Image 1 (cartoon, rainbow, N blue to C red):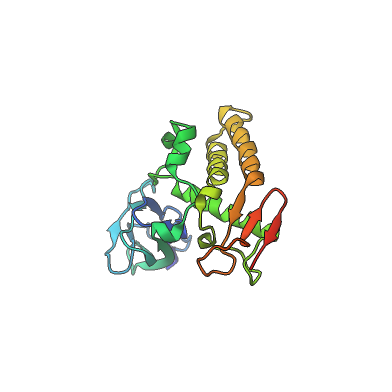
Image 2: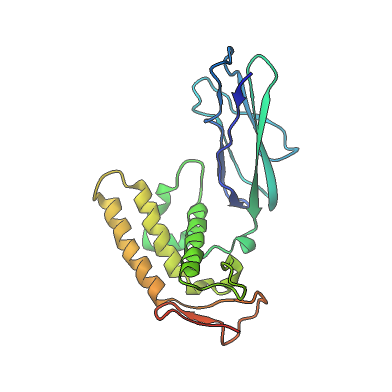
Length: 235
């Protein structure tokens, strides 16, 4: 029997944020003589399997949100006329405080009042995009040599005052959202994306951040980074 359940979803999500667990790429091998008759998803261990099967794969997904943080083991089970096969994936669910996202959907709305109409199916916020922007900002800092006292990449918790990076993260998210919805060369969405790309770069260059380089949760006068001059002062 060659059955291959497959789980597609984000690796990190926030509590009470809608996400989609997609099993539509699950399949049976050519040596499997019977068609798939059931596809089930269990969003976390002990929650029980939920059928998402239909004959044309359109609905082989489960929209879900988690009420508690921690690691969650998702299971996908597919069945033909024999024994079912199960695949698992472990994801991390964070509290709002631990996620420490640098911008919110309200920040996006202040620039574009119709922005929430572009939230994709399976989502009800752009938190996934804010999280991606957070990763990119921390990666950007690392690339130019801004690290913790051990030389490691900064964590989100190192950005104690997110107001110092809010504009940067906000415009970066808008750039990426409009780039994603653009479907033609130089359409209005690509034009908006290019505008926000410029504003994100400008906000980056102007950013002056107090960062917790040593992880003691206390910001001293020396823990400051000026992105324009790329000066780094650490304790």
